[in-house]
Length: 224
Ligand SMILES: [Zn+2]
Image (cartoon, rainbow, N blue to C red; front, side, top):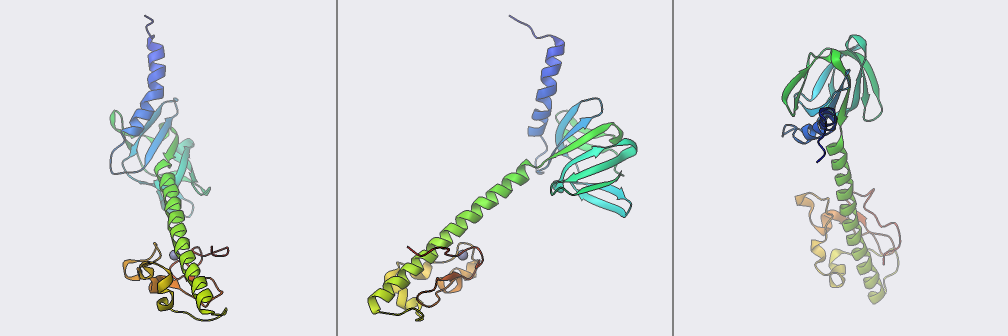
């Protein structure tokens, strides 16, 4: 059996430990940081405070870590903060030391031995994707409702010979859509969860509109 040398084990652990620390980071906080030290060590964990104080030429600012991509330390505690929106700030880190909950417990890391602090934005990005997916689902369901209203208007116009521009009511459309009163925009608040509060029928020949999100919930093509 091949036995790993101490050097190999240390090399393997140095790769694994930061990942494990990242997974074990303190509950209740979404933020994870990976702190690279000047000697090449990397420590992963959860920051004890979610903001750092930065002294700038314009005065002191509290930098929220959730907005930060990375903080590069330079000499004399000077730091360059790269934000997730690509903004950059330079200033002096007045916090001493940086505390993180890591695999080996709470560590206090003096800024002087830090090379880079990388802030893991994974959870925030994920929630952004989730939000986008939820928004798309909401929009699709609303557009589907708008299509049903348009279909009902078409049927009503065909059956009763209404010409374009004729106004119609929810009562007129009732025979053509099942439970039309219950159609509502999924983005509506509880008190707006009725067809009348959610949608504007608009005259025959013009697409119905969503009153809740009129800019994004709309029929772009012909109803079918
Ligand atoms: Zn809508």
